[in-house]
Length: 332
Ligand SMILES: CC(C)(COP(=O)(O)OP(=O)(O)OC[C@H]1O[C@@H](n2cnc3c(N)ncnc32)[C@H](O)[C@@H]1OP(=O)(O)O)[C@@H](O)C(=O)NCCC(=O)NCCS
Image 1 (spheres, rainbow, N blue to C red):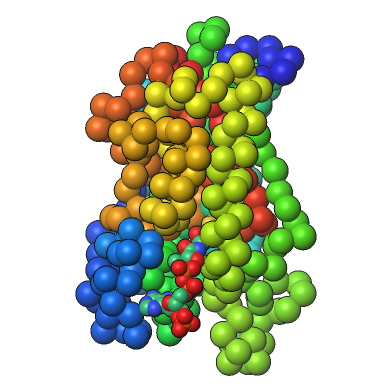
Image 2 (image 1 turned 180 degrees about the vertical axis):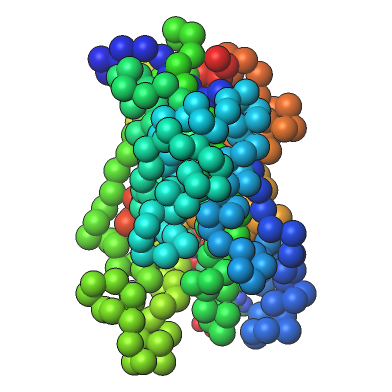
């Protein structure tokens, strides 16, 4: 990082997914699709679906609690909570405020961050810079989504892709040389129309018409997003590595956004990263948007893939269109 006052990195991670599983076989009964099509085109076998009444803040608080335990931090020691999400519990208050209440993190400032599936990496970058500046000491960063509520279950081209879940990380000061080494965030706002939830905001407020026209659901031009994703994963990975004087060969663990196995495979092939260094769990959860990278990071840690001083690279891309990558040297 440029002009860094102190090193900032991840102290602990956690994740939480709903218990209910929706398989490709279940989807075959809902829309005109097949396990074969979904598996070969996306790599997804199943996804988790939140129970009725289970909101984004519930999954976020559960993941947050686990990250706090892993980091050895009490809720009241937090001074900031950032929740990255495109499925907040409601328009306002921010989901981060609801999480603060659920955790009892009474001393934490709170805000939500909206950067689509890049949200967690965006928020991690913001959190690390807040800590590096000396302004904050313990920040809880959460990516959480209940995408099943904004999925059009009659649209086979999108409903097979998404799932619900949450992942979290506690960010704090770490020893010199560790933590966030560099990052690259960006957006192509002109491509925003490729992936939207059209209604319910100030442009197109909710009305009988917007409901009838199914404008409160994810609307995506999948092919164009696919091409963007493969290009940007390569570009942003190289850019953030280059900023800290590293290259793809230095990567020990690569944690990409889990949208589609074909996107991941195409990108790691271009970058020359062997698959054994890549955490892939898209088959179990589908695309959980902002939750995908932190769930994968937590699973990589739980599986013993990450050792102290490893170079860990996180990459997200999504609605905006946005992208974000971060290079970390692991350990406190
Ligand atoms: C959505 C995605 C899987 C579609 O795969 P694709 O290979 O591009 O497939 P296409 O959209 O070209 O569709 C091919 C055919 O399959 C059909 N199809 C689409 N969804 C289907 C489904 N679930 N089951 C069966 N057939 C399906 C289409 O109707 C089309 O049929 P046609 O040729 O008769 O018109 C792919 O484009 C993708 O993953 N895009 C990126 C999405 C993404 O990651 N979004 C989130 C970013 S964070």
